[in-house]
Length: 595
Image 1 (cartoon, rainbow, N blue to C red):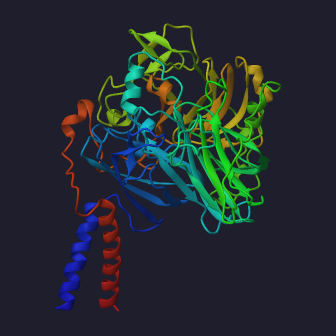
Image 2: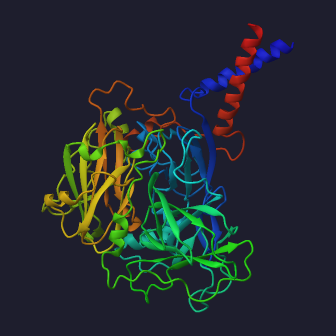
Image 3: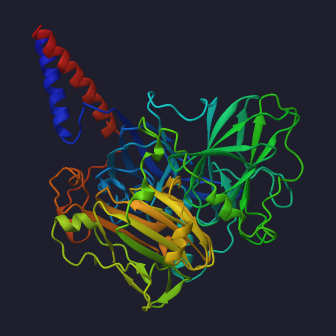
């Protein structure tokens, strides 16, 4: 009887495993998350508003994974509109199908769920996730994504006494639908209403600027301890200066790569960027201390309220923080202060990254460039009666279906593979124009910012080497100033107004990968494109096929089978975990009866 029951259970387990043919129980470990994306009411700046929560939390919970882990995130869309989550900086090898943008995934409709499954390869560091559609990030839905070193790989500093995560960003009291409508009407968003730190408003450091009763973030620490602060800029469009009163910040990592370690008293962090600092609690505890994130490159008096303030609270503190905030940077006598700070961020070439060899062992400066792309952003232009943002005169229109899905189903006219590699003098227009990139090429990309604000540019699926930046128009002679030895490798880089930034990228990851500004207003208005990178000798090993649960949309909508949405019952991740346990039981059963 017991043997019969064991056989039945084992067969049931086999069936459970067979349901998920793409799931492998061997090899690298899996981590599982269920994310329910919904609206809640919150008042981060003292005004009730609808924000986007993950599992009822704003900001959302963090994903905690380790190099080579397989990550499974089952997403339930409880919003009243389509949803996609994206994972910027996470290099999904051969798997742009999970990237969470309209060029790579069909959206998850309201009241549906969809499961992301991808492997994080050869990566460590600090990242974050967020919703990519309909300006939704302006209402929340974001959270941290931490990739830990494997135990056999040392970190290039003493193990910190704790991790502190800080999500900073400019914030409006209007929700994303209202902000989107403002942009659709051809209007500017105006000055943000404040800056949030971990979804909370500022500590009342000034009773005129900050009303009473606002919940603020308090960070508990112990004297003499050293903490790793992971700071992520999840905001909309405003560059922020980050500083901690009376404390030095030792920069050690950015966007998943270890940096040459150097101390800063303040640091400029731009939209979409992530940094790690080591901060030692070496001050006396006569009072608490301010943690500040304030608007940068703006009129100080007009933008004074756009300041986030949290509290660093020593366990033996004798009183609250009082007095003025620590001073922001003064650029009057040093116009290149911020750019020089950015140039000083260099790769720690003696440290191991995700593998047991130094990060600088890839001699990028000795590789011949196969193609140069100059991507120029400009002030908004009017196209068909509406203001639009452009790259090289093209304002990108999202395709009706993912690019590679259109390819594999022979859908013609879904996009054009004709994005210009130079900003030719042509009439700006809207188009579905994609950049044709060559697999295993080594390309140089120049981001030329002729707009009036700092912009952050991001490349999905890749890290790139930031080899140079400067003011004025880029020209070929600027290559003489490039850093060809220890340039930082990262995924998001700022480009100052009236300036350029040069990057080098090794195109070893097939698929379609997004290039965009992280400034939400410009991104929403069309300042993006995609790189299509295909191996001409594709044999099924360099690019993954569409996942079994692929969504269909546009001209392929008829292929979609209805996803069953359930507010209860077993989740996919729970089923997979159960399958794993069952398989172990089956193996034990087989071994027992064959012993």
